[in-house]
Length: 262
Image (cartoon, rainbow, N blue to C red):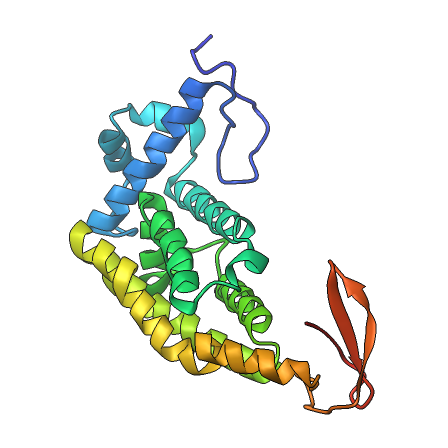
């Protein structure tokens, strides 16, 4: 019986041939994934081999095969690890707490979360490969970009309820795609340049672009507008109170019949 007899023999749903149950096995899997990230970054997916990955991880190729049947399964597991980290980053963002902050402070918190995400070598390589070698992906597609757009649109809607759905979609799409372009450039640079671009350039870009829509002065004007109760969807003044939601007053527009919260 080998040292890895504690592994499950059931087929994994995340690219793994066997799921490690003990810490030693889990650590070995993570080491293989980080080694694969380094190899894919150095030579590209097509040129990479499982022998190179095993050597980089400091393990025998036979040990690698106990967890992964081939290179594609390693890549697929990296995809899912990255997806898990992105979802966790979104879930940990307290939208109601950050929307009341000054614009630059709000963007700073979001950008720091993104920067921390890309400190992980697997996430860095997944992002670069998605824009340079998309055909090898099995799990990640454009839906993740759309989820990011929807996530930002929700934040902007909370910050300025007067923005309609089309405005929210277009503004968020510009923010996400422009940020992704900077991130891609940053991840291809040295550590120092990468951190500078992720920490400052994206923040400056987003603050400058978003200021007219959700800036601090816009927030003050919005507060004054909401006092006279204008529907943020059709701009009608024919609104009435419609109960409370999470302690906030809800309103119903008599013209377009849509609800909104102040």
